[in-house]
Structure formats: C-alpha cells, structure tokens
Image (tube, rainbow, N blue to C red; front, top):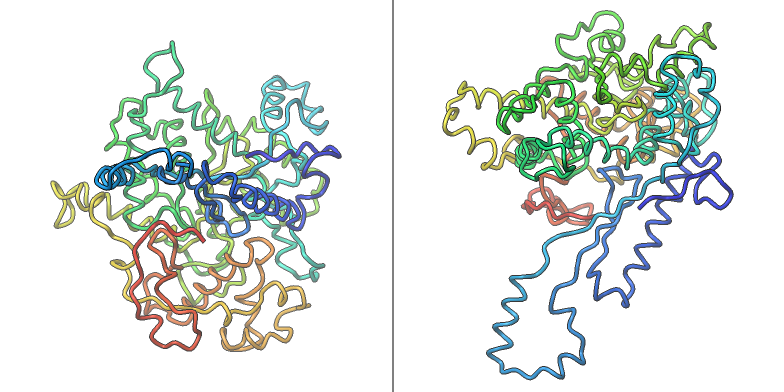
Length: 541
C-alpha cells in the first residue's frame, strides 16, 4: 500500500514530515485505522483476522497481517437452513473443509508512492555533462517530497530536543532513521531491481515470464531454508526475504554467481561471500590507536551495480554521490567530512565497539553496508554486529560441512544444513530474561541530560556508576529507536560484564520461537526463566 507523498497540500505526508518521526507517526496511524476498518463484521466473509506486526523487524513501523477465513465460515445462515444432510455427510464434509482450508497470509506494508517526472533543480548544473540524460533518468526513477540531501547518512533528521554541543548524535547524524525513511521510498524500486535481475536469467527473449524453478529461485530457497533452520529469518535483527534476494542480486550482477551455475553452487557462493568479507571491520583489528578509524579502513561496503555497468562505474555516475561531493566542496573547513559518499556510509555505520568488551563504547550503530544503485538505501542497516558475527560463523561452518572438513561432512552435509534444526537452543548454553521495567527510559534520560551522567541513578545500577551511564545508554535512541537501542545496550552491558567468559551474546529473535509462553507476566516469579519456550515461527505481536 503506497501513501501519497507528493508534497502537495492534499497529500497525506509532505513538508518536513521526515523530521523527528512525524512521517512514522502518520504512517502508523493510517495502518491502525485501516486495521480497524478491515476488522469490521461486514468484512468477515473475506478477511478472517487482522493482526498488527512489525515491518522487517522494525518496532517503529506497523504493518498488517491478513488471514483468510475458514471455508466453513463463509456459509451464510440461510444456506445452512436450505441444506439438509445426514450427520454422517456433515461430518465427512467438515473433515474435507478442514483439510482444504486456506493456508496463507497477506502482509500489508505501507510505503511512499514514488512521484513521476524529474526532481527539483538540484541537478540542473549537471545537464552539460555527457551522462546528463542517464542522470535525469535515474533522478526520475525515484522522487519524493524529501530533499535528496536529507537522505545522506551524515544528516541528523531526528532530534527530539536540542542537543548539547558535545552530543554525538548531532555530529554523527541519524543514519538508521534516515535509512528507515529511504526504505519506504524504495519499496517499488526494490521489487523492480529484483525483477530486472530475474529477467536477465530468462532463457527466451520473447517473454518476460521467469520460471519459478530458475537457478535464482532455487538458490534463494536453499538460503532461506538454511537461515530458517538457524533462526536467522522471520524475526527481529535477522535476515528477511528481501535482504537475501538483494544479496543474490549483487552476486549475479557482479558475476559472483554465474547464470549457468546451479542452486548448490549459488548457495556455496553466497556462504563464501557472507563469511569471508569483513562486514564490521573487526577481523584482525588493531586496538592500538583510533579503533573506529581502523575499522573504517578495513570495513567493506558494496553497491549493487546498475545493469550494464560495473560497481565502480555505478558509484562514479551516481547522482547522489555527486550531490555529496558538491556538499563536501561547499564545506571545506569541516575536517570530519569524508571524501566520498561510500566513506561517509562506512563512518556513519561504524562505532568504536568491537567483539572486545574492554574497548569503551558510547554508540551501537554498527551495521554491514549493501547499497542500492542510487546509494540512498542500505539493505543491511538493521543487522546488528552480534547477528553478523554469529551468521558469519554459521556460514563458515556451512562451507566446512560442504567441503567435508567436519565429521558429518560429505553425504551428510545436506541433512545437517537444511533438515536439522540448529537454532538458539542448540548454539547457546543459557539465556537470561531482562524485564523492560528495569531498563531506564532512554528518551527521557537523553532529553533531560545536558552532559554525561546527569542524575541517571538507574543507569548506575546497570553500568557500575552514574558517571559511566552515558557510555552505554541513550546516545542512539533518536537514531535506532527505543527498542533497538535497548537491545543493543543490553548486549553491550552483558559483554562488558562477562568479558572473555562468553564467546557470543545475542538478543532473542522471533525466528527462534515464541517466547510469550515461556515467561510469566509476574515480575517476581523466580521460576519464569525455567519454563519451556514453544518453538514456533507464528508469533505476531
């Protein structure tokens, strides 16, 4: 479902709604209103149930899950009176209906409707270049009421209250919040990107239909099953079908996966690509000197190339990249400005945190980088460092299993990779329940604090002292959102507390099961953490 964002007076969103979460609030109000309308009794014959859900694991975005009604609910009372059957016939028909009930759901996601025509006059100076026509086509492919300069990763678009002069949020911008806006702008463009890649794999040029059993679909299916068996799919801080698809799009367009390669070869190429690249810049990290700068130098960042170009040509001819260069030339005195847009993305999605808990950290916005061809959307921005480390380890283990370097390799590789469940319960030794009531209200603490500390007594209980409270809590609430900031902060606190006694710490994700039946609502129930958690993926909260 696309929202009118043309910027005109009658449009649903426009003006400066992209600032301070106003667009997200309007979007969620619209989603809840539509949910109420679809839940009315007059729609029961077509829509059985309406559930609210998080979109792509983002708690700031509300989506709808529509479940069709059962077949026996469609029969009206008048039809039931006309039909006279024996008890045996009714029982047999009920069994058939239960077996033939519809088993699918429709997920309704709200985004911004792309505009037609060229963008504003920001790019009029480039018309004299040889590639001006291509740039105008790129500019016309996605337009919105949001100025393109506001979609740069170093822009701060979410500031609830005035920050102090030494605030890290104002200096580093809000890349995750900005990326969340760009995601809604590119919903249609992402679908077109995948469809355009699939069209190149079609053996016949006479039709645009792509067989559902092509190598792309089969490789995507294998990767999805592998991720689902490990809890890396369908949950917060995990892969989505879209992220897996665009990763395959990048591999196909950069010849990482050939058109004639089979599904197994494509799966191996995906595992190698994900496990061998230093997504966080932490491989063989030198803790001496500036840790953040060392990570930026080693961190990889990829751009999906435009069809017919390579990755370097796409970056060089990208209109957003040139817009950033013009902005850099306009501010030559700023010493913290990165030379290129790709370096700016690396700096915006990198912090001083690492797998070493001894390194002090005040931010939690580390994420891998895979940009769309317009260099405005990072498809992997929601993946936390803990997920990247764990998934890379599992991908490396998959390669060892395929090449027969483990005991159950060789003929048993398929069973171990795709048939056996290897989720949270088999990889971790223990899990701990952290009540949200014990976590301080980060938004209020950040807004009321004028510097480090600032009367945060609850923070001192978690970090050891009130003066160290700002080292963990509250610096990235405006960027990540309250829930995500809490999750990453809890992981940071536990990492510092346990040190080298823990090899990995992860927040529990929905893909590993339904946690609602595991714990009691009572805060003082000591036996709550020992109850069995039902392993189910059908958790819509």
